[in-house]
Amino acid sequence: MAEVVLFHPALGLTPGVVAFADELRGAGHTVHTPDLFEGRTFATIDEGVGHAQQIGFGEVMQRGARAVEDLPAEPVYAGFSLGVVPAQMLAQTRPGARGARSFHSCAPVSEPGPARPGPARWGPGAGARDGRRPELRRRGRRRRGPRAGRAGGGHRAVPLPRRPHYFADSSQPSYDAAATALLTERVLAFLADR
Image (cartoon, rainbow, N blue to C red; front, top):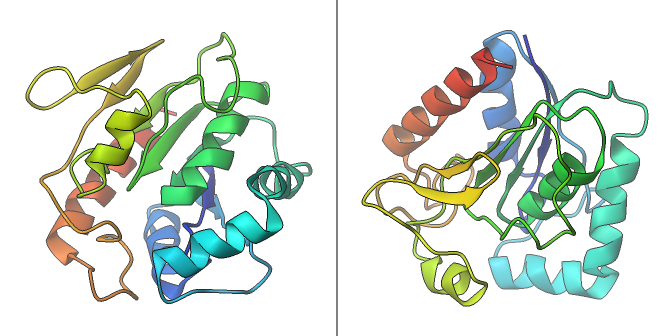
């Protein structure tokens, strides 16, 4: 079974993110859900991003790094939306990462710094077709092919059909149970190889 560090989105550590983590735990995985906002949650993306800007994106990443200091050195890092940033940074810079997943967002491999050579597989699981695609295109991410793209170094995008941005958060009005079930199935298959 895998050890997973799951970072929350700009809305904070919502009950829906905890529920998603509980699904993975129910399959036998150990899942850590660091609270980068120290208990604060937000009703909208804009409010959450505003809070992240106020504390500083660098501080958000450092909180992510501090959250894993005492954890085993070989986890799978995952993040929802804003949580992709610390997940990707740790997967690329902390030795021993067994893999990484991004949900509701993705960033170019070069965003958190140069990619670290090693066996970690980055597997974006959702987000390329959730309505935030223009932002990704401006940041340099391009999709190649009808269902998947390559970002280099074994990074593979596996977009789901177009859904609202927070479709996998059961505490949000945009929750889509069928799409979340598909995402969960793909994540569990990914973790089975870790």
